[in-house]
Structures are given as structure tokens and as C-alpha cells.
Length: 139
Image (cartoon, rainbow, N blue to C red; front, top):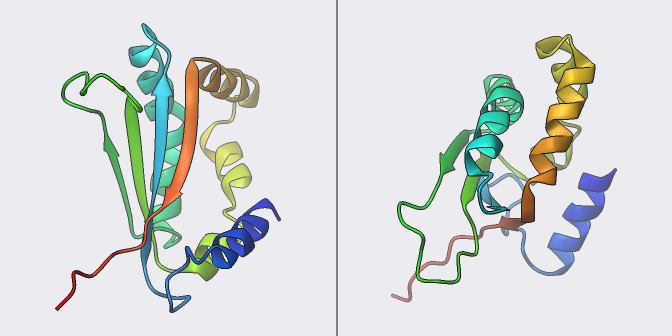
């Protein structure tokens, strides 16, 4: 339900592509607290990345790419970790992800999984999601 509400807001703001079934990326930015980057990445790749890969294998996503800046940046250091997911269309994005049942299948020790996911977010300073719409240069 949260995803459907998010979709409605994005469409109202004009963020959705003109065609609902046009592939589009969303950039998920993370700013990890100083000194916790390795821990965050270890937990991300242990617990969250396998869920993304499983969703990609099921066709919910077209691509999943993960980035970190090569240097400290120009001083603002807005983000320290970036995940870009390409969805096949807004309908797929707005549909239930099935992530909870996937997590139960992939991680039988749910207590450890929940504790580590909680910790992954405890070491963050900020997190934001940015749906991206391609901009064509003028002719």
C-alpha cells in the first residue's frame, strides 16, 4: 500500500514517465555514518542484496547496480553508497514485491536477519530514493 501511495505522489508531481510501462531507474542513496562504511556494506551484501537479486531473477527488476564514490567527493559528501534499480514499468514497481516471503526463504534465521537489517539502518545518517526520468537534449 505504501508503494501505491508513493506512485500516486510521483505521478501527481509529474515524476512518472509518459507511458506507465516504460522502464525507469530509481537511485537509492545512502549516507553512512563515519567509520561504519565497511559494516554497512557487509550487512547490505549479506542481507539485502540477495533479496534484490532474487527479485531481479523473478522479473520484478531489469537491473541492479551498486556504487560507492571513488574519492571522498568535493566536500559535501552527500552519499557514500548508491544502488540503482531499473524497473520494467510503474505497474511492476507499484505491485507487491514479495520481499517478506523471499526474506523468510533466503534467511531462515529471521531473528538474526531482522537484527542485522536494523543495525544496517542504525549506521546511516541519511537515506533517500530518487526516481529518475531521462531528459532528451533539444534537437
